[in-house]
Amino acid sequence: MTSTFKAEEKLILALDHMNESEVILLLDKLPNLVWVKVGLELFTLLGPEIVFKLKKLGKKVFLDLKFHDIPNTMARACYQAASIGADLITIHSCAGKKALKECKKSSIQGAIDVGLSPPGLLAVTVLTSWEEQEFIDDLDINQSINKRSLLLSDLAFQAGISGCICSPIEAQKLRKFFPEPFLIITPGIRSEGVNRNDQARVMTPLEALKAGSSKLVIGREISLAKDPSKAFKRICEQISY
Image 1 (cartoon, one colour):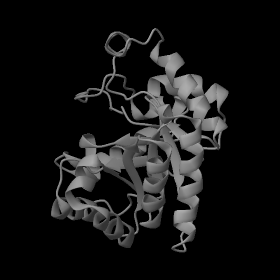
Image 2 (cartoon, rainbow, N blue to C red):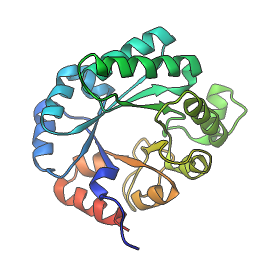
Image 3 (cartoon, rainbow, N blue to C red):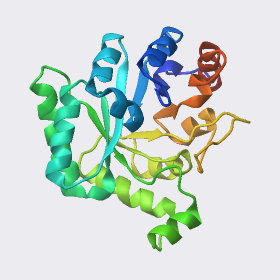
Image 4 (cartoon, one colour):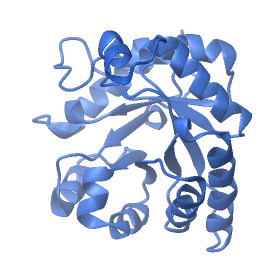
């Protein structure tokens, strides 16, 4: 089967466990990398300035701060995230439909006010670190992760949100209900034989794309590799089906 997409567009590199100089050094080794993820750790360390620098390097920025608060606070945070140039922004779907709608409206305005294109918003469903029984017991939720993910994705869909975040395990079911262009972004990606670390619900890159994932979030398998460029190329080859 001939690939109908550019593999590089499907990968989002998580810039975790690094300082600014380490980030720049890593990106110098990955000239074909399109997307990067700035999470809580890096953003707390370096603030909005890291987003500005990544944009100057020509990267698309997935700002993964998982906003979850009252609707007004979430909306104002999305306004600011859009105004600094984030291309994708994460918010928690369990904040509710009202919050999701206000976040979308504010993110559009935040981008317009600085002359940028509006970002996509992604609603977080169930974090990939959760295991089924632990999820049910700890949160006292008498509902499977699959059902909860479907409910929270539907909230996002009804609110006009660009897509959702879920594990690749849920992607196949969700894609049946939410066709493209609704985005399904999946962390929990591990090539065969790679340590799962803190992820519980995982798939290989190719499995995840075939299950319906739009883009794959991958971190340590590339960033901690002896040869990041080789690791990136290997994964691109794996998904070029």
